[in-house]
Each structure stands twice: as C-alpha cells, then as structure tokens.
Length: 421
Image (cartoon, rainbow, N blue to C red; front, side):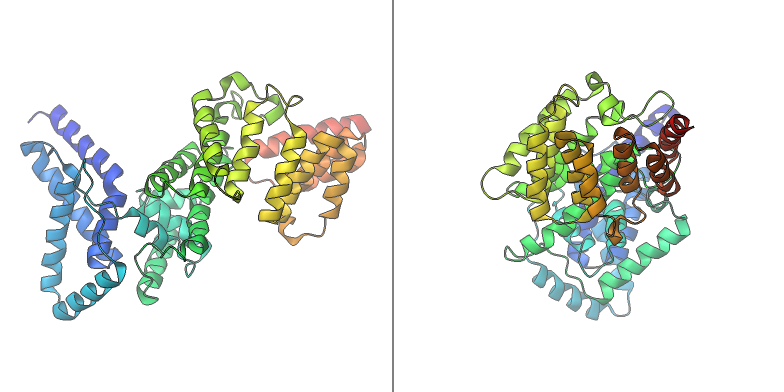
C-alpha cells in the first residue's frame, strides 16, 4: 500500500472515531457499566482498525465494526478478571436497571446510547465544573489535553479531575440511564447547562489572548444538535440550539483584523451568517410554541431581535426589555438583571439604566464580573460623568480576563481621561 493511501485510511479511521466516539462509548458503558473499561476497549478497537483497514478497506458500517471489536475485547478482559462471575452478575443487574438498549442506528449499526451518557456526565451528584469536562471528553470526543486547554489547566490536572469524576460515578453508583418522564424536567436543565457552559467559554473566553474560542463554541453546537435529534420534543433543547446559533452567527464580526473586540453596535452586520440566523429563528418559534416558554427559548428570542435589526437604533428595545422581564421571572439572577438594565438604558436612556445598575451594587455574584463595572462606566460616560466613568473603567480593566477585552477598556479609559484632563 502506498504511503498516500495509508495516510488516507488513517484519516478515515480518525474521522469515523471522532464522529462515532460518543456513541461507541455510550453503547459500551450501557453494556458493561464501566467507563474506564469502555475507554480502554474503544481505544483497542481503533488500534485494530488502524491495523486491518489499510489492508482490507474501511468497512461499509465502520461504527458497527468498531463496536463489535470493542465488545469482544471487553469480554476477553472480563474473562481474565478473577472476579469474572461477580462482575457479570453486577453488569446484569445494572443492565436491568438501565432498561433496554436503544435500537441500532440504520446507517452505522451502532446503537445510539448517547442520551444516557449525557445524563450521566451531567448528573447533579457531580461538581458543575466536572460535568462540562466529562461532556467534552466523552461526548464531544476531545482528548484529555484538549479538554485541559478548554479549561485552561495543565493536562495532569484535568486528567486527575476526570479520574475523580469517574470514581464518583462508580462509587456513588450513578445510573447510566435516561431519567423517567417525571424526573426529566429536573434533570434536563443540568444537561443543557453543561452544554451551554462550553458554548459561553467559546463565545467569550474567560481568559487568554483571544476573545473567542470557536472550536469550543462549535463543539457545543454539535452537542446541542445531537440532543435535538435525541429529544426532538423538548422545546428547551430547541431553545438552547437556537440561542447558540443566533449568537454564533455574529462570530466573524465580533473581532477586527487584529483580533480586537468589536461591540454589537459597531459590527458589520453584513458579515453575520444569515443561514445560521434563519435556522435559529425557526428554532425560536419551536421553543416558544406549545406551552410556557423556558429560559433558553426566551434568551433565543432576545438574540433573534438583535439579529433581525438593521442596526442598534432600530432594535426593538421595548420588546427586548419585555423579554428580559419574562426571563427574570423564570431565572432570577443578578446577571440577567444586569443585562436587563443595559436594555432599559437603550429604551429609556442612560440615567434609567444606571439607576438599575446601582441597585445591583451589593450583589455578590457581580463582584469580579467585569461586565458590571464596564456597563456602569459606559453609562457614566454617556451621561458626561467622565471622572466616575474612569474609575469604573479601571475597575473593569482589573477584572477583564482576555487581552481584547482589556485593550478595549484601555481605549475607553484613555478617552475619558483625555476628556477630563
């Protein structure tokens, strides 16, 4: 075989594994009840594919080939286990509790158990930070070093976190199953929050040299698409996917040629992804139809209003404020109140917005949250209170995490300082 063909086959294996990894792991965990075992035998199946496929060709159902190979490796391991009989009894009991397996996928022959894995990774017994890391590792298919980069921690630290989380799953006997219908309303928000936290880190990085981390944002959207396929009747899943698409549609306009921050009112809206916006708008209709709205559906509706406007001045600010009122009732939080105050400032003027922001001054959740002093600084600047604006800009500058945000605040601070000189 030529080197070129071998390289192409290797690439095919990687592409299949990247796409199928979540389903493969989920199917193996459902069968054997052990995430570590599932990881090991999935890796062994890939190694076998790299040996066999270059000579035999990529099979017509690569997912099924990988699953069959991995299952055989798992059974071989269990047979060598001194506690084989006990392990089999445990697996049988766990399989009975988890319920029947999902039907085979019509394309690849690989049962789609990913919904079970979503709820396992986002189980409320796990720390919130670990839920996102597990979701990236086992459903998005990122390697441990890639997950470590996503959370801006050393690979060894992330490896320890993942080991600790898997141990928690094992020792707490967290069930690998989809919650019963009566449990779903209480459990689904945790799954959605795990995916959305990945997206928010991609949309607005918490630290580092870049404003956006498009790889993370796109992985979150891919995960939301999987959830949408697996839970087509859940309107909040549609709302989350719609929200992320409507926000991500602006990605190319959010930074300038040098990576600098470009605020919404200064963005070139012709660079927004109109196909993505249209898809997001359709999902908003789904999310808001058929019953009371959920928080993600309302946020998606707010994003749609921004995307529909030709410019900041023509944005339907009264409707934006009204939607924030709904969101505040559904999910009361100081961050939502902060965003509502900014919208009120656009509807009623900077003084009205500033009064609302000042009412939030004592909120612990806004301490260390640089958008709060940055918003106050902008409103103070618009009111001509330059010296106070400079103080607020300095506070925001000390808290901002990324270099583009810091550079934007430096420019604003320099401008108000020049006006007060």
